[in-house]
Length: 91
Image (cartoon, rainbow, N blue to C red; front, side):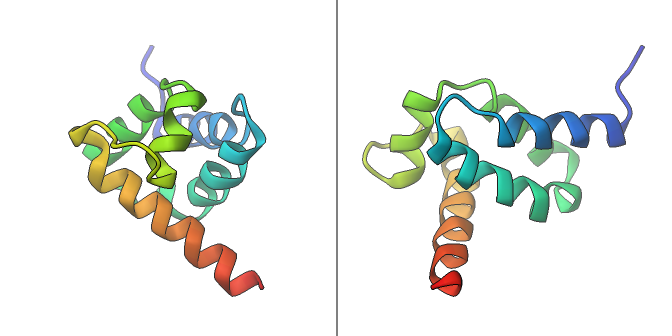
């Protein structure tokens, strides 16, 4: 049985908020809440793939401490920018 779009988005939001480290919860969770429903199918597929990555790899990629794999570059740039803007506007 195929997963419905609504079920997929719910699963991806849950996985975004329940990562291995709190820093990634706070980066991916708000992004997922705000943006997942607007993503096109290919970007959703890429985000779903990103969720399978280890937080120990993801955090340095999104923070810019280490280069990320080229196929994630656009998405992680967007996520990082979203997190920075969210942090700046809250202060």
